[in-house]
Length: 331
Image (cartoon, rainbow, N blue to C red; front, side, top):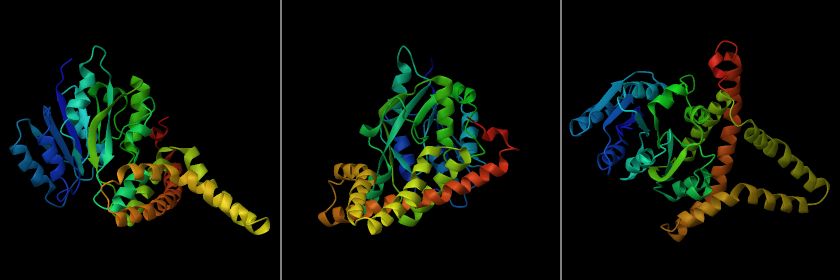
């Protein structure tokens, strides 16, 4: 099989943040054979930066402007334009490890090459808050089960033919689109091959308000796509049933119920984030470590509230369109 690979990326108003990605693309130990960017209609200097970047590269660089295209549509446009049999996907706003593309491609050179290779991503925090954010919401490689891992499209490689067979990225979905694509790919191709050293560095949200918006949008996408019913049901039961019942039990029976509930609840909700935090905070000062410890529960609860608000909004959207848009019945 030819190992010609096309790197694709969608962008929108990424002028201030895209330099890290472009620099890291230029420094790959295995350079891409072509790079295709699809811009969704930026109003800043993103397109000019990309065009200037393209003039300096050995490999061809295409910049396709498609105003109004969401991420799914942008990825599909980029893959349609790709001339290589292998697609490597990433996102604006990340920084690629210099071995990223090399590690993604290595499995394709084996005697039984896979159809899909899942890369990985790790946090690139710039503050104590961002360290806490990464520990709360981003898994460690040790948390991953390779048999069930669903890769983010910020670090993935797959055959262009598999993308076509899987029905392409779902253009009706604006968030969580890569999960639907993953499910379809897995149904079409079987298990993915995990390449844990194919790493991109991803900066967590730097403010609580931005994080709330991000997780509201994620949960709205879950509702639109009918994803993770059980997870969302458990969250509603915890906050709307278990917590009030615990409060009433503490008043009616004994305050010891509150202590038991706090201990068990904190262990269930915060054990994993704090375990990750203690492994990742070595570069922080003592005061910054205290800040990070303080932020973990606030981030976790904020994310839960955002999801509880966003999910029914997505479900309402889905129910209103389910009869007229058969593609929403994707599973």
